[in-house]
Image (cartoon, rainbow, N blue to C red):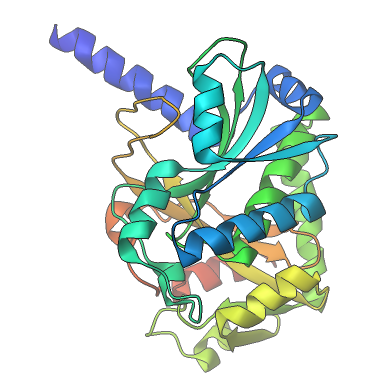
Length: 311
């Protein structure tokens, strides 16, 4: 019996890592692309939900090009239709459990403080999935994790850019080796760019002077609003560091409402503000759940590793 339970746990872990790392099958993405995309909106019962709905409609119309047509539907209506056995859909929605936790915290539209709020057991994410005829269980094909409970407009643009880039690579049959070669080529673009670092995310033991000593190209330590402005405007002068949570589930409940996750790690990406292209990346920190704390998630060792990669 114990052996059976252990086998099931390891199987669940393998499935979870596959889903969370965006290893969707090409056939799933082809099916996803062929359908109208239904973007699920939140019930407007708070300032943040109003902001989220306005923003998500705007950025899907502007940045998402994979599907020929878009639909927007409030979550309650969507759930009703889904459980009635609606015809096959491609779905994009924010992870519901995370949204519920955000509502408990409240949100102040005049500050970005809550952008950094975290929960130790649940990563926020944009979920991309398929629902087939008369099926109530959703086939999750990709989960783009975000580093906070209150994604900003910049965070949400980033999530769409990363997901669409991944889907297009899969559809084009790009191999892992080709992807690594592309990243090696992309890093050359950093020579002419200023790297923007969110002052909240830089560890308090790393001064701007120290950061400039470690990183080979120009750095600015800024308020997040400047980073978001560069993303929204597609400013070619800048790149920025994006924190990337990586989830490690030991057990998952796969249903449309929740994905339970037992552990975290995170990586870093340097992203081109102009078009969302990843110019360099570090995988996981290897430090586990304790690192998911408020701010300070960019340390000297990450800047050293980026500098080494850029030589």
